[in-house]
Length: 342
Image 1 (cartoon, helix red, strand yellow):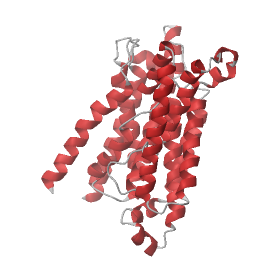
Image 2 (spheres, one colour; image 1 turned 135 degrees about the vertical axis):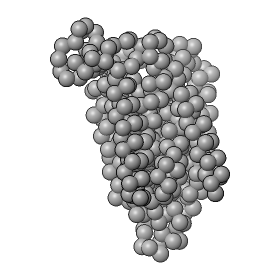
Image 3 (cartoon, one colour; image 1 turned 120 degrees about the vertical axis):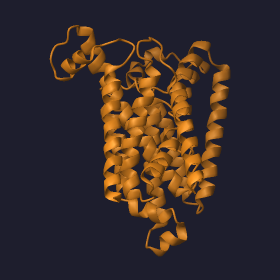
Image 4 (spheres, helix red, strand yellow; image 1 turned 30 degrees about the vertical axis):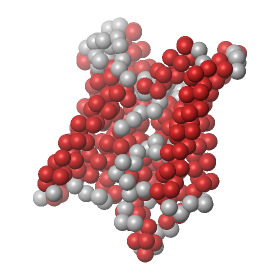
């Protein structure tokens, strides 16, 4: 009976993922008939050349970006919630997102403060905002890893990450105060989050960073199971807690840094999806939860992007607002249901 339930749970998730991926390609501000979408995806010539451009060069790359970003944030959230044994932990508690935001702020806002003409540096524009965002995130990651050598308690490291985030936020506010209105608007648009800003040229780099972060986690499912019972219990099972902790921090930071660099700070997915999967599969076994959060996170990201696109409307809603509006009621429902059945 349990195996049958497990099978149907996975079937539902995969159907949801495939449906979300297909709808994200079909729906958008420009209405394109479903038949024409199939024609384009099969490699044939559509009725209008513009449809081929929209589907292949925008919607398809955007869908792959959403798929990778949702999986990355969900897995990072699962790791950090287990590592810190804190249900409120999410991918950006280590200050990685704040570091990426500070890198973008220096790129977008800082140039105006020091009167630097970025138009002279075309290679920076070719790389896009991803390069300064990734640089800021990596700088914070190096700082966190260095501090972890002197800290034994995970809770202390969590607090330090939050303080780094507050400090980076303060610097961003100062740069915003002295910057121009146009550059402030550009930075604000980045903070809304979007899956549509990653080109096919940037996608291999993004995918490589995400796959590297995923690879670091897959070999530590048993260690995560032990760590959720506490460090003393994990050590009694032979887990090298310090080494595993550093690996999990690098993995979670790399995943969240990659998403923030290429998509902006996408909130709530990394916090909500692990809770949804624990409730849906009714298990705390990370051998099941790791693949579950990957599939569920990708599906959630795709559907959030579909809602943000407002099919038939030229305007695009802030993705962060959509993820919060969709995720918050689900989490409240899961928590109330759990309490009711307790």
